[in-house]
Image (cartoon, rainbow over all chains, first blue to last red; front, side):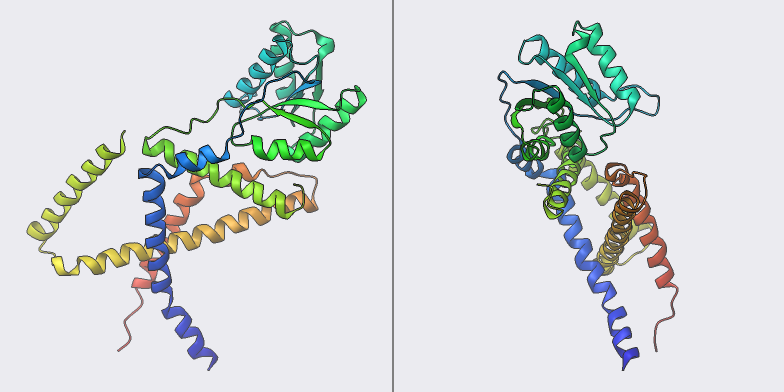
Length: 212
Length: 104
């Protein structure tokens, strides 16, 4: 009896695989050759609201294996510095995990004319949730825990803003232009689709875990 | 490269492969649907392997975070390489299944 059930299950393998293969091929074609990813991307974007705040919080991006800032990390740092130089907030906070990333960003800010006393650095933040908690500690200590301009990637902004709001901040989103939603080249569409799936999975995980 | 260029190139090479298969290698055109079914089966097997591999990656990352002081980023684990290796696993598995003698 048990043996016949097992044999029947094994004989279903080709049918299951064919159905999955067909579904996967359709999904791949839709992602690469239709504007599906572009439309989805547009739905995920949080529009910027650049207005005066108590601090500008730049989220981490890690460093490359050579210890240099990643392209995304550099863009975020520069965007934060630009907002600071426009006078939108009196403090500039860099968050992240590795000391060398934070040091590199601090050095960049100093080089571009940001006063050393305006820069706050929060290390030991591995995830977005850690970053929100770290920012709350740092800015709470500095007496500026209210309205913050959050600088991060366009697709990451929804999750980041939700976490910062949950940590007691009023968030003004300042997304960097790291993702372009309207690139009709199949390779770009597939890359965008992977990013969207990744961020959606992260968002779902944060909601399931009760972080959001 | 724009999508239509890729699709045109694919159409040309598919037609060429069909010509070589039917004219040079003497393959029967009526067996093409069966071949397409086998290709989909291998792809589907690759998705099964990918789901298992990816699921294990996620469990490993969450386990490391929960039970040790270490940290594994999910961004680093969800890589194209897992998909490519899963396809290789599926090709190998399907080839192995094909070595099984048919029941009489």
